[in-house]
Image (cartoon, rainbow, N blue to C red; front, side, top):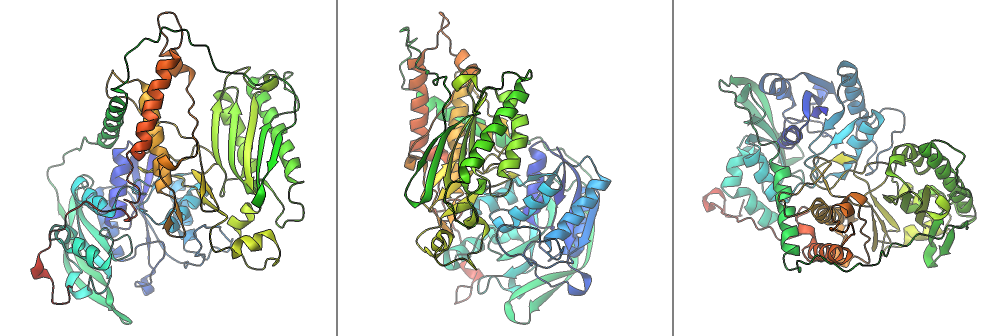
Length: 619
């Protein structure tokens, strides 16, 4: 897709732009939020402002695309992780909305927005909020990309980025007069950043706000020239001598003569395919090579085709499970199958709405679809998905939605020839818990008691709407995960999508079938989501081996690819290979090292420090 890059001039936004291009997207223009001229040192919660004066030159003369800028008029007014526009336009996020809205007018072909968010949920959710309002897709290829040290190496080595420090806020590690203007690559190569990580716990890539950078050159993106700083000045914070910025006074562009095109756009995806293919081969190498001539009895059982009310089970603590939600009648009088499926879905949601009205009567807020944390949606045909999804979003909304698994089971498989069936799990008061700050509640209410419980959070929702290398973006209004009482995680359904391309993974060897690598990739995606969960800063997602249960669906296409000479599915061989791949994925956690991105897992990178760079205090 054609996209606009949000650029601060620093390494993260530049590298994210490069990754978007490498993943097949086309850069149209760049956008920048700058501090107001009379307040150039005002700190923003959302935007890097240090070095802002040279970004226009960086974009127009080095990258060679149109540049759009807006001064930041708003302030960081809404400081909660979840952003909701209050309508008065005074938050700095609304400056981003106005800027992107204008770019859409000038470039209606733009469909996406890239940004350099790495671990900041605060930044990511605000960008996603603005994108959703403007019908744009958020591209966040830096999001949970790798560990801080590995990320830094990728930026400098894979990205070919040369950058200098233009802001430091990490005393006593990084000091203004000593480190501002220094090459980031030099600080990495001399072991300075590794030493500060070991001694003071500093994030090597600066994700904790320890430093900000200005990119002077990026060999794969700056095709026209590189920035040269001729004159600069160090300005220290009057209240904190450990905080300072590099004010760039004079600069110029050194033109490049030889323009070479880079052809490594597929590198990341190909490497991922190779890794998954090898894992499948390893997992299935010890299985017997049999044709499974036995005519295994088809164990697929159809549901009873009779009308019945949904099953409702209410458990202690307000957890409720509703299963077999069906339309009272099959809409056979509707000629169009998709329209008939929509009518049945509307009947299902009407039944559910009626049921919710009788659950936990007296609660404030009243029990509603907001309290539903997991949905299992069964369709007769996936072709009905698009139309049903339009009504699904109206019922469940897009803000902190439930996790969802959606599967097509084939015509005639659902009770009474229905086209839609739904199961769901809800937690009493959880919708209000997510949307309330806990103030002004009745002291005896269930919701207030939940907020008073310091042992766990009643509910936590992980809803990432940006395309990234981390895990697949949700195709529709649902979350990747909802966590109940800081203990039980309800994961959304996973398929074998490569996160950065949102395309199904393909095998690198003819000896491995598509369904095998897709199954392996699905487990990897699930592990990545678990790695992204936290509970108030405490990692709590667990690993794949902690799963209470998992359900694997095979498509008709996958089964047809396995047919033997007699036209039968070799069920025993299918089960053996699927079981082997799944067990191997569980044992290695899908290849995901838990906590590596957040810095809670041991970092394997060596630390070679030049002692002459430090004084007796280790600074």
